[in-house]
Length: 244
Image 1 (cartoon, rainbow, N blue to C red):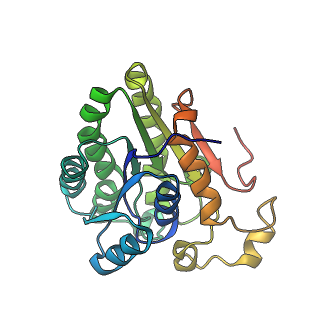
Image 2 (cartoon, rainbow, N blue to C red):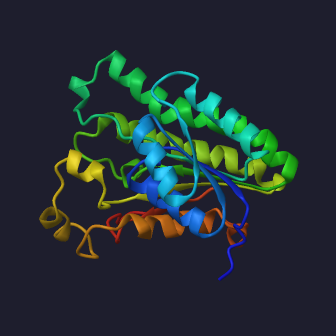
Image 3 (cartoon, rainbow, N blue to C red):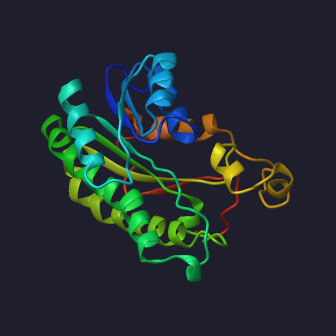
């Protein structure tokens, strides 16, 4: 299948490891011009060199960083066709253990970085009458996970953002979708203490997902072939979600 991504300009946040890295690699493999972003300058530089992408350093936990980075990427590439909003998950904590600073940090990292990047990307996407906006959330946006209070709440809100924005920009040739990864073999699973043995009994597929499986769906949604898919929240979870 020809996805029509050759020379498309893509910006992928949180791409020094895990899901963001896998998505960026797949976009490069499809011939897209990709700029990858992380706050770890050494790691993002090495990743960019390895895959043949450009890179930028930005800390999404700091106000204004996503906006600055998106504007710089647009200027560097002469526009933007694909925006992948992806950020690290907030620390694991029950509600009683989350103070005001914790909520504010999570809101900046997960929410404001996303809305800032989208706000910067929309004018150039509208001008070219093409855009693909992908929000990497989590299955926790639909089925909250114990102890992930900040992530559960804010990621669920991002699904409302997708549903609100998608109809506003559909006539401009721009699609907006959310990707909901389930248990996928990334560093985040190690940080949360999730093991293969635990997953085998919870996921109908009987295993963790691989980052490349997630990336395949992301790249399809970024392509010409997905032009009629918008406003959706698509789980890549091996059947873990049971509800609609």
